[in-house]
Every structure is written in C-alpha cells, then in structure tokens.
Image (cartoon, rainbow, N blue to C red; front, side):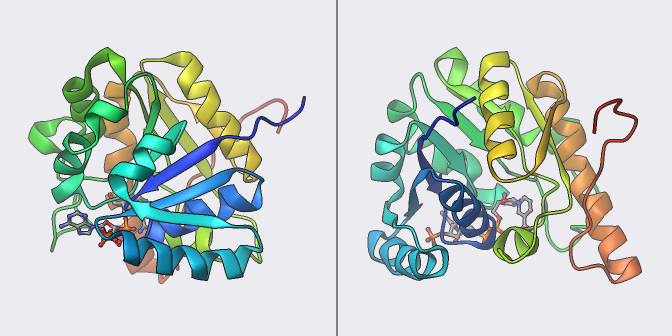
Length: 222
Ligand SMILES: NC(=O)c1ccc[n+]([C@@H]2O[C@H](COP(=O)([O-])OP(=O)(O)OC[C@H]3O[C@@H](n4cnc5c(N)ncnc54)[C@H](OP(=O)(O)O)[C@@H]3O)[C@@H](O)[C@H]2O)c1
C-alpha cells in the first residue's frame, strides 16, 4: 500500500526527542515543521536538521507549527506539557495530537512518579476533550537512538488512545520510520508506558546502556 505523506508539526521540536522524531519522519518522506517558543530558534535548528537529512524541515513558533500540521507531536518537558497544549488547543480541533510526554520529576527520574497515580497524557485528553484525537506514543524510545540516523532504532512502540483510527495512523508512522508500533489500549493505559520509562532509565544507569528499549515477543509473524 502506498504510504500517505503527512504535514507533521513537532511542538518543542528543538529538543532531542523532537529533533530525533523530526529527522526520522522527514527521512521517511513526511513534511516536517518543528516548533519552538522562539521562531528564530526553530528556524536555526530546522536548518541544521535539513542539512543532516537532506530534505527541507521548516521551523516556526509552536502555534504556527500546530496550525499547519495535520498531525501534531508534543515533545516538551512534563512541567510545561499542559501549558503548551493550552496555548494551541484552539488550532488542534479534529487533529491527531501525538503526546510523547513522560511525567519525570527531577531529580528522581528513575522512580515512577505518575501524577496522582494517573497518566500525564490521559490528562491532556481530558483537557482537550473529544475534539482532539490524543494518542500516547514514543515514551520508551530513546532520543539518542532516534537522532543517530545511521542505524535503525532497536525498540518497539506502545501506542495508546481512545480513538482507534488515530492510533492506527500513528502505528503507520512508526512503520514509516522502521519501528513496530503496537496498539496498547485506551489512553488510560498510557500510564504504563509513562511509568516504564523510569524503569528503563534505572536499567540504563545500572547496566550502562545508552538507551534501553522494549520489545514485544511472542508474535506469530514478526
Ligand atoms: N529525551 C528522551 O530520550 C525522551 C524519550 C522519550 C520521551 N521523552 C519525552 O519527550 C519530551 C521531550 O523530551 P526532551 O528530552 O526533548 O526535552 P527537552 O529537551 O527538555 O525539551 C524539549 C523542548 O521543549 C521546550 N521547552 C523547554 N522548557 C520549556 C518551557 N519552560 N516552556 C515551554 N517550552 C519549553 C524547548 O523548546 P524551545 O526552547 O525551543 O521552546 C525544548 O527544546 C519530554 O516530555 C520527555 O519526557 C523524551
């Protein structure tokens, strides 16, 4: 089946997770715009990424990026996740918002600290309501590996959301960048993916791994 080409915005796309996803998605043929609080910073980083991937990546302020994207990724720290979404909520209606947020609370980032025992991404679905198709994904994929374009990323992706077709679209994006995405349940299940990241951080530290990931086993067809 022919791959659909999307206009994709990455809010907070100047950080490592955003740049890694933007690079991989652009390399797969999608049209990327990275967003920042400062349009100038976004343009500067976008120029660097363009040089690396050999395909134009645009840069703009977060709001303009969200406005132009058919699919919008959110890659900002947990502390500013809600505020960033609130600032663009009116332009997200009808769109897929792929939230990669992990509710890490420094300094104990190796310890699970879910907000009131719940999920950071589910809270965004509650904030946005049904008008925004929130999908939780990529919490367990290391930015370091995403940014190293010379090798495939050795990790599976847990994809959670209440809107199944939206989850399927994100699973398709995973496939476009060489990853296996797995539907992992409703948005409430994002809590498990978010919590797992602190487990992986602990494993990274204990075993001196650059970016541990997860694999789903037992599939009849790999
Ligand atoms: N790093 C990883 O390996 C990894 C893996 C899985 C999931 N994640 C998740 O992905 C998200 C981004 O991770 P990251 O490591 O790329 O984060 P980061 O570098 O700390 O921040 C990403 C971007 O967010 C923006 N930002 C930072 N502070 C802000 C503030 N006070 N207000 C508004 N925007 C702010 C910045 O963009 P501007 O200054 O340009 O606005 C920054 O470049 C996090 O939620 C993280 O949990 C990360």
